[in-house]
Image (cartoon, rainbow, N blue to C red; front, top):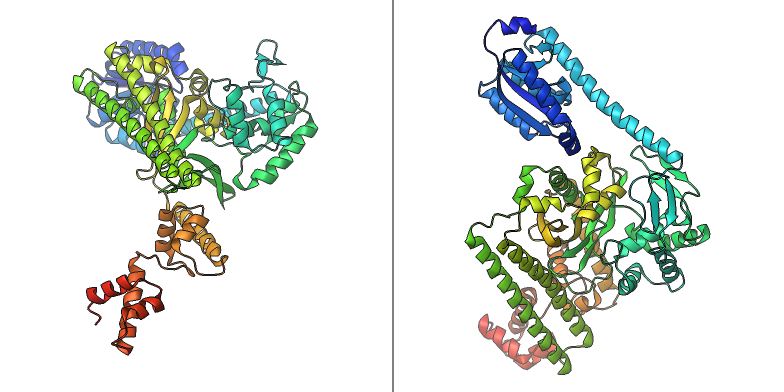
Length: 625
């Protein structure tokens, strides 16, 4: 159908649809340019513009706010034509989603228009032409991504660096030269000496560095950051990049060396021997965040788990410097964190309105401020109570009721809790101060977004095309730490983006586990149960549950949960207060009295290794005589 034929029929109602892939395009030119050109064209044709719908998102997605609003308008019978600058603005959808979109337009007798052409989807030739354009748009997108990848690989082969550089180097983008940053270069030889000569572990090195200096981002050093310094080949001059197609490109003599190749090789050998079981050399999107367990306050680290479909699964578990007992012992497949966390990051960095659901900044109601002040008072009270508990712990130690080891464990647990409470107290006080000054707003919140991460995402590259190292950097730039709540399966990540640098806690609800993940988790629990049974058997005698708790690195609750799942441990005395032991003793007393009705309680107690008082209690309670 031509434009002339349609114009002669009736007054045409047109919905203009414009789309760009990135926020930068929106701000610079594309949305406004499309709007001006399409509005001018619709007026020239004498069409009535119903509304202009906008999206800043990929054409491969059907679930976009502007497109959904457009389809609502179509289904309400308010539109005759959808006008776009080119059809690929409307769709680069896969076949299934494209068929759905066409179906909605065709059922409502709505046509697709571009300047100079109208496609009637009820016409077989027009539909074929539209299908062909959609396929070409998909292919064009794949070719573009492929060309970008080839260009970046060739750029790397030519010895050029790109992306974020190690803090020990300075990069001049104009001359494309790299020089040593002498303010930070001392870090590498110090780490090498502590690791190779003094045989310090990663966490101890991080602690030592914290006593000397913060990181370049003014944060505390972590074991993961130390490991990354030891693994990075740049420090002996080598540029090494692994791309999405699996190709690894290595170029020597690119960086001014801060360690020798020989030293690097020694470090890798030692790392492989000491840390091979947990895969410390691998990048992971969560490894730049300090994650703590909400139940015990201990650090959770990303640990390598089972090998499935050609790759290792990774889990959030307690780190090796696990100190205080934990009632939950979480083991979380990090695949359950990836999609919800990256979805929030993308929404935040592209300015989607839905991200406001994570930030409650509407304090016009005085009741919200009062609630925040009340919460702050409760936190202060909890800190005071915890300080009192520490004083009582010291009294138990001095009286000889507790050993120094037990004292340290309980003290550490309370101090971990106080550390988190003090952070919340500081955050709440800053919020209250800004609210009273009327300085807490969405505008100021987004203005303080981490620029490095924003530039990466807003540059038009989707998360699916990032290497894991880049994702680790992005997440590390936005979030300084997190707390995992095992009971609710929520990861509260803390952002450094709001006014005055106030960290903001964002609750990220984990994806539900799939059947395979559940099976893997069950196997891990079974393996843990078997190791516990091996520990009991190794004692060469029956032991009590109390002894087992002292011998095992696991807590009493975890041991009991495993026993409930897989059956009672063998070679373990039943606990004195357990219902099973009570039932067994009652049966034995009954059996002995049946054989000898006049048998005295003292003899029964001696035979069964129990107190005479308890024997008399059971005889009376169960009417055994």
